[in-house]
Image (cartoon, rainbow, N blue to C red; front, side, top):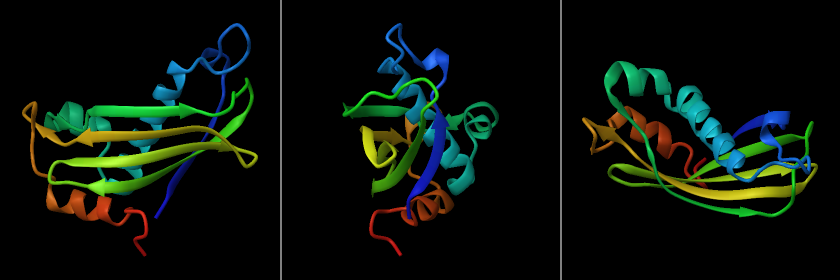
Amino acid sequence: MTYSRDIQIEFNHCDPAGIVFYPRYFEMTNSVVENFFKDEVGRSFASMHVAAQNGVPTVRIEADFMAPSRLGDIVTFALDVVKVGRSSVTVRITGVMAGEARLRATLTLVWIDGMKAAEWPVEMRDRLARHLEGAA
């Protein structure tokens, strides 16, 4: 099951040429991940990182930038879970506008508890598994 979120390109995302400055895409992918965990996994970053002292830091990110996005564009970011491990999850995020791919990124995040990798809590693992590519 794919999770999606629209993000409008703002002035602060752009360089002097009026296109998205590529590091800003990493902020956008993090926003998509943060909202995915809140909306679909049932854990907000605030509840994890602040209240419970655990979280899901990104340990690997790979990105391809296919076309520029401009100020005012509304890009739809789609997140698919590719793999759920004992303590990690790999997600693929694609940013598209008007049928044109702008960004493809693959991220690996690790569940930590006490600043160490830990096994996913069962309810989180089950919710992540519902979003695996090809899951009904």
